[in-house]
Amino acid sequence: MIAAARRTPLLSSGGWRISRRCLSSSQDSKLCIGIRREESSVWERRAPLAPHHVKSLTDKGFRVVIQPSTRRAYSKFEYTNAGAELCEDLSVADVILGVKAMPLECLDMLANKTVAFFSHTIKAQETNMPLLDSCLAKNVRILDYEKILDESGRRIVAFGQYAGTAGMINILHGLGLRLLALGYHTPLMHIGGAHNYSSVSAAKAAIANVGREIQYGLMPNTVRPLIFVFTGNGNVSKGAQDVLRQLPVQWIEPSELESVASSADNRRLYGCIVDRFDHLYRTDGGAYDDDEFMHHPERYSSNFAEKVAPYTSVLMNGIYWTPSHARLLTTKCIQSLMQRSGSLHGPAMPNRLLAIGDISCDLGGSIEFITKSTTLDNMFEIYDTEAGQSTTDFSADGVLYMSIDNLPAQLPREATDFFGDQLLSLVPELAGGDWQQSFSDLTISKTLKDALITYDRELTPGYQYIADLRAEQDKQPK
Image 1 (cartoon, rainbow, N blue to C red):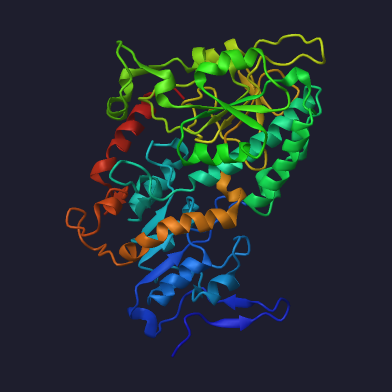
Image 2 (image 1 turned 135 degrees about the vertical axis):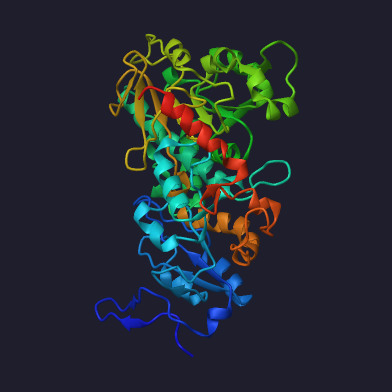
């Protein structure tokens, strides 16, 4: 039997040097799954499947080949022990799995292949249109995880919970830095960024210790009450809420915001979940109807800026947004919220709204002024509402914000486990698909077929609107 990949010992490291191309073997008849190396960011350490998922597939007779990586949170040895083969060239694979978009120069190897990943193209995101064009040209069939939906339209495969978890840890860290720059030491200074913790449980333990300091009354009176508002109640929001629960938090209803904001205890924080029906209303009058909103969001306006934002200290935004949805906060609304007030107990504080964690990261969307992502290298910026621009000076006037598009990368092993648990059951069908059929004749489940963005060098019928969005963008002044 010929080995699947030629390996030469490395005397300096005791590791293995891997050949660029998987060799022919008796395994050629097996359905083959490829796993890409992530190269979109130095922080990207996730994988679509963990070693125990790979073992489940190899035990069932599938062949799994994986590009080696020294950055991936799970080591190559953990994958090979699970039965995977290390190989640079994934062209042998029937389907290729990744997480984020790949560099354009990697597409030659993926030509005429079905590749599953988060493409970030379904809203015609300008920065990813070169990727879409290259995939069309090279007949790379994009299967976008974001569009693998159940019958009710909910996502089946997502990192959402871990985006919320990492985002909440980060915003607590950033809030501590912001308050320090404004003149206040707080217990929040003892919370680091999410990537500073080896696991979610380690982060929660550290945050719980901070909670005890808050209970002892170590939060300055001037910064009370800290009210954390969460938009939506999906997996993203729930992940963030779970982190806040490690602190002494009292949960309140939106109707209680005004009264709590005027008189509150500095030995606790306050949390408030704001759902769609709390701030959306029919523009032409009438009660909120969830089914109608799902099908016709353009019929609704939002009073979030008037009813909720004036009493919010930290906004954790986890809602899905498209141009047909009303914004939570326009740039004009943010300006009206930023009124500096004096204090008898210490340095002046910005008026109420201190920080925004835009976990959804829909640029120019529900939070209008956030038009560019922050990064894991530079997680926070301060938006100066008067100048209409951002700065990294934490003492500047304005509101701190975070809008990172790869938050789960900070918790890579647990995020990989969580994601792979959802993806695993779909992989056999993906590997067994007859991708030589025409799209109309393609015999895979509707769940997966509806997630195919490109096929046979064309946008599939459900995504031809992307061309229309691009045409509209081209008409806009640059």
